[in-house]
Length: 232
Ligand SMILES: O=C[C@H](O)COP(=O)(O)O
View (spheres, rainbow, N blue to C red):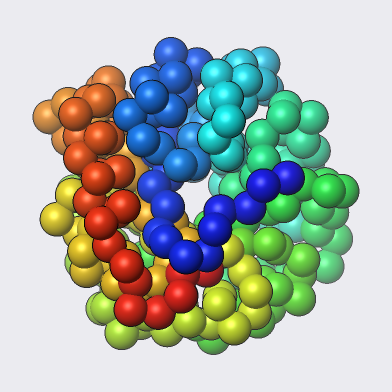
């Protein structure tokens, strides 16, 4: 499976269906992420829609969110439900400090742990994620209430998270009601990708439709930035 080059920060765009996947692909998304924006921060889509999104992503990497399970057993079931859909990654909510015993990760399919900014994650959470077998880690916001990632966590803390992911060989991501003007500041921290939904939708409404001009603008912005540190 291809892996994003560590030399630049990638653009992840969350999509709800194959038509949005094709739009994101055609306007410069690097990672096409299947997610139901009507069902909160990490609403999972049905497996057949995820499969169609992975196909529509074409030569782009794809991922799918698997939900917000309460423990390792439930997480294993959520991951298994989407394991055969053809996406390159699965993403699943994971509480900092959660007991990983009993977590069964799908063979050969990298899984990204999504930590919520409201829980105050930082780089100290990363070693346990690596030990649990996750291939990546990202921070997103749980409440889509207008507050952005940087309203919850200061930049040095985000930088520490990205650095810890690099140190442990994990792909890292930052998201949470990001806007285009967040790109230069957050990309400079060297995450593997920045994740968007609402900021690339018409009227910044994450439950509305994606705006192709905004996707293209985000892609242009990211392509122009060389991170101060190597992205991971
Ligand atoms: O994975 C990224 C998320 O879909 C971000 O959604 P958001 O930009 O609406 O907070």
